[in-house]
Amino acid sequence: KAGVTQTPRYLIKTRGQQVTLSCSPISGHRSVSWYQQTPGQGLQFLFEYFSETQRNKGNFPGRFSGRQFSNSRSEMNVSTLELGDSALYLCASSFEPPNTEAFFGQGTRLTVV
Amino acid sequence: QKEVEQNSGPLSVPEGAIASLNCTYSDRGSQSFFWYRQYSGKSPELIMSIYSNGDKEDGRFTAQLNKASQYVSLLIRDSQPSDSATYLCAGDSGGYQKVTFGTGTKLQVIP
Image (cartoon, rainbow over all chains, first blue to last red; front, side, top):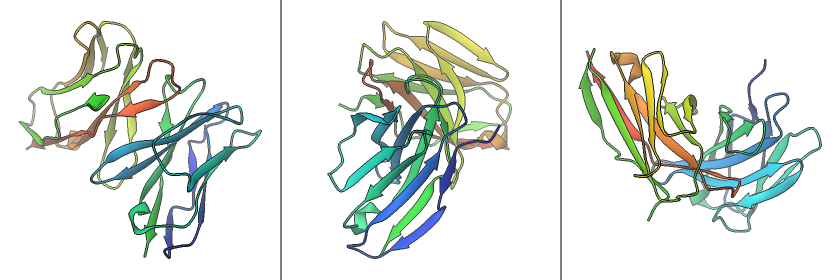
C-alpha cells in the first residue's frame, strides 16, 4: 500500500512569488492535514480537509490556502512568499477525522530567498 | 499556554536503560493521543496511539494515558542508539478536527 506522497520534495522560490504543494493521501484516506515545521516553532497546524471541505484552519495569514479534490488529493498554496515561509511543509492523511491515526508524507522543503 | 507541552530535552539515557518521555495537555475534551518519532531530516513516523486511560504496550514501547491528570507518557525499554530521535506527542482538540503537536523531546541513547 503506497504511503502519503508529497511533491515536490524541494523548492527554492524568491520573495513575492507563489508556490503550490501537492499531497496524495494513502488510498482510502479522506482526511488530509497540513503542517508547517520550523526549528523554532515545531509542527504548526495549517488546515484540515475532509471530503473536499476545509473543517479547521490554524493561525496563519490568508496567504496560506488549500483545497482538496474529489479523489482526496490536496494542494496548498502560499502566495506572496516571505523569507519566514521557509520551512518543511508536511501533510498527513487519516481514514476518518484527524483524531485517528495519521501518517505523514516525506514533506516539501521550501526555501524562500 | 500551549495545548500540548513537552520538555525539549535533550534526554540522555544509556543503552539498555528505560527512556521516559512525558507530555501534558490542556484541552480536557481531547480523546486521542499519539506519539511520533522523527529522525533528523525525516518526517514524523507514528509509533503509538492511545485513546483510553491506562497503559498500551507495543514491543519495547508503552504509552500511558491519565486523563484526570492530563498527561501522556511514552516508555521505551531496552533503549538502543537507533532510538535516538525527537519524539513528538500529539493530541486531538476535542472535536475541532485538528491534531496539535508538542514541540518534541530529543532523546539521545548513549552506547
